Image 1 (cartoon, helix red, strand yellow):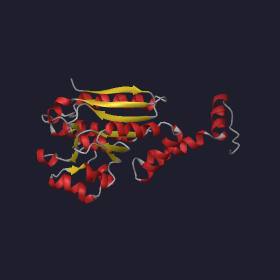
Image 2 (cartoon, helix red, strand yellow):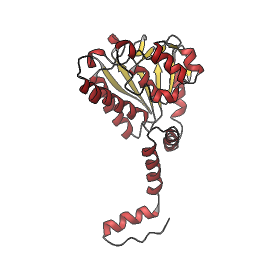
Image 3 (spheres, rainbow, N blue to C red):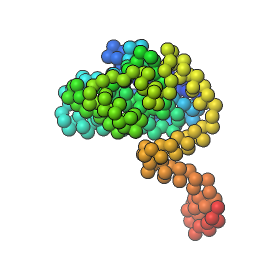
Image 4 (cartoon, rainbow, N blue to C red):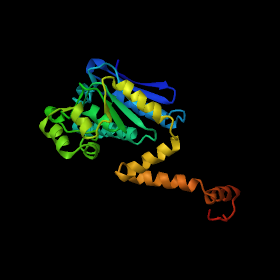
Length: 255
């Protein structure tokens, strides 16, 4: 049965795609499970970083299971399948903890979009990237033309989306889409994450928010979150809360 597992590994949470019979293609159930796991990870202060992996060695994820969307009406396809997937992948992208995708095999369509939602990626030499949607009469729907346009040079994105070509691990590394190409991408990822979990969690969270705001990844929410965090540390905020509870006029100290 297809699934997405949440596996605690100390300060690192592993999210594992488990649908190897279909090359880890996403089902509705897998999307729902991923959404639930992301909520748990965000609230668990013991988790400092996230590693996204997949079962098997043929594919990281080949996108969305066509049986999950092939019979949907146009309205259902747009309103639920595309919007739900987009919302959940955005949730991954905006997670406050650093995230790393281990591309042990091919990442196609939604699988590539999922990897793009992580902060960095490590890739096996034999793995390739592709956006094959036009070959089945659809378009990328989970940020393939949006987030990927910020992460890849336009000609390479067009090469995949408009010409149906696969991109090698070597080229993905050359353009900065992957941090490292390794024969054992999981081991390489673990080495990176071992260092990441020794850093200040709050400094990492705030730095990630600042970087995302700079590249317009939900800029409005990021700016308001940073502003709210700053105001929450002031004596004015404490006085405002205290005066409300004591039903009196506030006397703000301005500090």
